[in-house]
Image 1: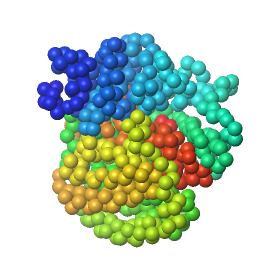
Image 2 (image 1 turned 135 degrees about the vertical axis):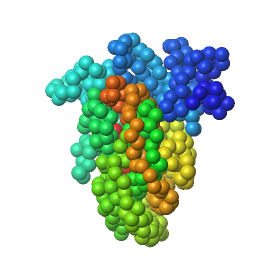
Image 3 (image 1 turned 45 degrees about the vertical axis):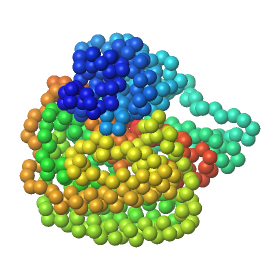
Image 4 (image 1 turned 60 degrees about the horizontal axis):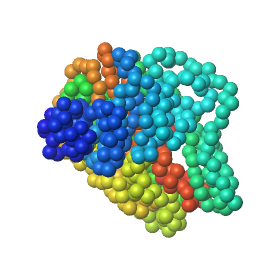
Length: 527
């Protein structure tokens, strides 16, 4: 896509004109594989660009680092979004110093700390310089995503420094630490509550206790061999993350995915959405002691997992999506059987939903609990059903339509209350919408090939997908037919900070249901 074609329809071009001047735009801008505008400003231009982007209400949705292939330093990529517009600022830094933008774009806070841990980049003016990904037990100077760092086990040190949580002081204030080890079989995370009486005054979250080295593991591998890595980013988002990875590879290689393959991918992604939301609904009801409703949704979720296995061979839909399409076809008879099951599923789901929404004790616990305010959505890049329950109108399937979502457009279910009840209601509505979408996709699925035979090329590309939890970002760079850099940022990574704002003002006893209403992934954050 040319700059001239975008000139009159893309606000990103308007912003670039303000940064460089209108005459310089064609020479200073490039259009990426996903239609994003990409620029490389000088330091003074970068400072001006950040202010201009903030004034035009762009949202910072991604910030990540990579090492220059020629060894000349590092590249920082800042990915900004404005509705259906994407703008990438690329900064080359010869040293390991850059200026922080977190005071203007708060969603940069975690990524800047992550770049410091994994690459050694230090951000001047940053208001939070604590470790994030690599806890104090990792040795000083250890930056695992540097190319000079081998992918081998690291020996932990006896740390003398301790992590400094935010201190909240005053008469009657006391601390309640929860985790990282929990009573249930869940992943580790620490929640530090500051409480006055029974009311939570402040919550601070610390994660990254199980850093797995996902991005390092991908380096040097063939793209096809990275599918298992992409699927393992977060187990219940296997189809979404596999799709995001494949989209990036396909875009940089200009691979056309067959239409039948995109229909099948869509069935997988929407089935995954249903399973995820069913777990959320059941979990919320469990946390308010309403097993009658929770059990119905738990049973339906188990049935969906079994149906997933029938159509794909995997309960979590793994091993089907691959660069170029899908690994194997699904017979039309099997798809028809799945469609018939969804009709029965929808009837049972509506029955369970009517029971829940007519139970006053459940509504009383859900309503006005764990409110997330709409003004927080853009600064923190909160997305997905959590955002849509607070009035947010963003959905990657609509804003940056991919695959066949331009033909099968999802309905945006928006509420403004921002509480647990709103999140429950939005997720229930999205289940019904996904059921309808799958039925329409199966009814319209064409015959034909299921995978392209085109070859993967060198290059880099960005991809966005709408996972069950919201916007997932994937960046893939290929050099000499091998993965040079694989960056993935899940919706959970951003949405965890929403929890810190949802809990204050509530009592600790409401924390489990607030937490479950977001249902964020530890694994999808602790890469």
